[in-house]
Length: 241
Image (cartoon, rainbow, N blue to C red; front, side, top):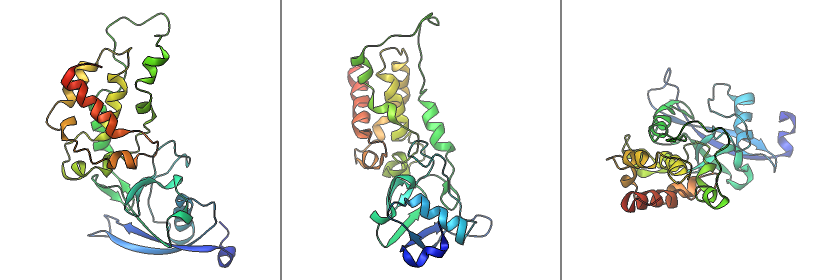
């Protein structure tokens, strides 16, 4: 962005929650005046701060097109991807903070290891009883459609870190792990459904969900997260999948 053109552009205020463990005893808020154009996304505004005002600002980003999921953060109190929201839609002052429930490493960067550990625990990969096939494992369109919604997960953690249970219980698997289990539990080619269901039947598994729908609202891919969780609960009760 051309800084010489600032006077000809609209300006917004980014209110960013900052924390540097090497300097700060507690997180604090800092404000930055940022010019923007109608097409600018919040990620562009964050880049402006980092490249023109304060190079120490830390945040994750990669593809900038809503595919990698690395730039999930709390924006005006709701989990979103900064690359998918326009500055002009967020108001004259925009509050930005790290997603909740995971340890903050610096500024908007959190430790994602607990999140990925929970996802790995549900074994989100195809498990089969037969030998390696000599050709592709075929599946009908109807069977594929059964779990189509949960294949969309990009592991951004927006759903899990919007969950009040997860905020208060670091052992809860969380919505994203259940979504990734769902994707394979209902896959007609998979043989590991019972094993995954038993994992999710544990104390910190699927029964900790309180159906607040925060996760569904937060998902940037439009996955019906709460519906998927309820389907896993029904599979546990009726053992039909």
